Length: 341
Ligand code: KG4
Ligand code: ZN
Image (spheres, rainbow, N blue to C red):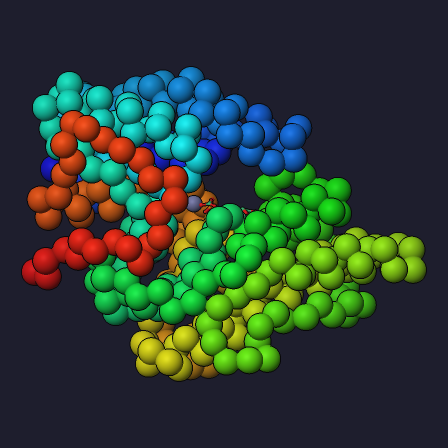
């Protein structure tokens, strides 16, 4: 069974083919970063229009690369939410329409569930249960995962998501969009130690996060700095250390609370090398296994959508020809667990 996956929830157009027998056959990605860079962030309407331009050529390229014809597609999965409404509609309309024309089933999948399962595309893949740290541009969540569709939200951001905090702080420092990689590059130039940012909400029990104060702290540090050379790199470094340290502290707590022996990290911020190293150290300390997606599957991609779509379609889930999208879609309202085999 070959499943086509389509991702268009934000500023990346992603397509992939996942096969029940052969695993991930191929994937293609078109990033709109250059299109939005001039505006310092994603412009929703420009994103939708660019998905319209890119999606079909990308799909044709994917099929040509694999040597498959459209009729070799046995099911279609598209991201139905959460995300930008117009952008989601492009993938949903094309995916649903294609499935209708090919007379194959289609399923709309949850973007964060797709991120959560992205480490399953690696070898070795984690077994259930595991603790998941989801860190993207829109979400920061700790989730207890007992199986596909069996998620318990343990904590989440009460304001800005970690990725959002990276993006906003990068903007303050005059760096480009997306801010995460830009902050990381600048931070690498710092010798460190000049500034120390707070670790928000770590002084009280609980697994929620709050990152918006770090942005304010960065503004104030920038205002009061002494003008010494390299202070921006020092701010980037202190900010990155504070985010990473806070995530590590909460992961440690969540591992203690769940007593799970596996930790997975997914979403755009999981591409951050300081975070990957710090969580690998935490895992060693606690004797747990840690799993990351490969770098290209940390940020948005079609492969994770094709894989999740395969799982759901193989379990018999599908949608009628009347499709919908859900720009807001809390992960813990997913109540369609897959049967255990
Ligand atoms: O998962 P993703 O591609 O899209 C959403 O679902 O939101 O995540 C994008 C976020 C952006 O905020 C971006 O700045 C952040 O991930 N990001 C990073 C890194 N690469 C991407 N943050 C920190 N370090 C990175 N290397
Ligand atoms: Zn994402």
